[in-house]
Length: 315
Image (cartoon, rainbow, N blue to C red):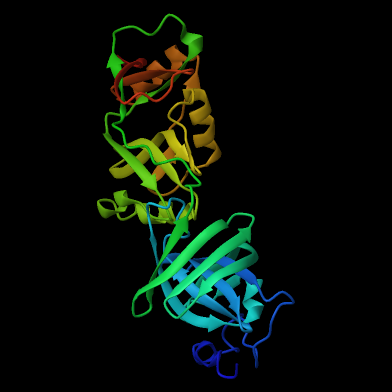
């Protein structure tokens, strides 16, 4: 047992970090505790820590625990941590090892099915993390983590954007629609998983948005527009939220879920929407030089491609 925390201590100065730096390892009564911490360091990741012989054996998991057995996630084996880390959360100063904000994402107990130098099979019993997992070594400190059993979330939707059909006049049943500006921008679907989005390859500023979601999964629908000389991404639909596909839900339900996210940043915002108010929205579109108005049926599901449930009425 002596020496298990040597590497941990060598990377930390107790006078510079609020992290626990104990003298000797300890243990919980059952010896089977685990914690997962969400760590907003230089790169967002989740730290999985399993109690073993008085310390917390640790892996940094960049995308968090896999929700689908068909997709394994990288898990980087790091130094053993002290048992006091089971409840640690706080701000590690920038410039220090692991500098950034750390919070407890979940904790509980686990069962060991196998533990060897290159394979660890466990059953997690937590509030947010539960089920059977296997960690297996690939090369050096790199491991992979695999979920065993059924997926615990809906599959991500893989579809084309829903497009409005053009017509000259507003719908007769105005009260059954929400009216929004037609922005005239470029359509963009933004999938977010594990605090990351593929859309950031083309638009690096979206990394900040994705990281703000933490472990929450989402697929956002919107448009890239230029307003006041600056590029802005306006979101007006939510196709997937926190493990659940919303494409079959009415637009009113998807819109409420989108607004609950309270998306507002330097490069993105939630587009305004006005149920049952065509005339003032069309007038505002004219005054702002926008192409027109989009009428969206409140009871419409998300239909890929052109749809008569969304109508574009030019200004």
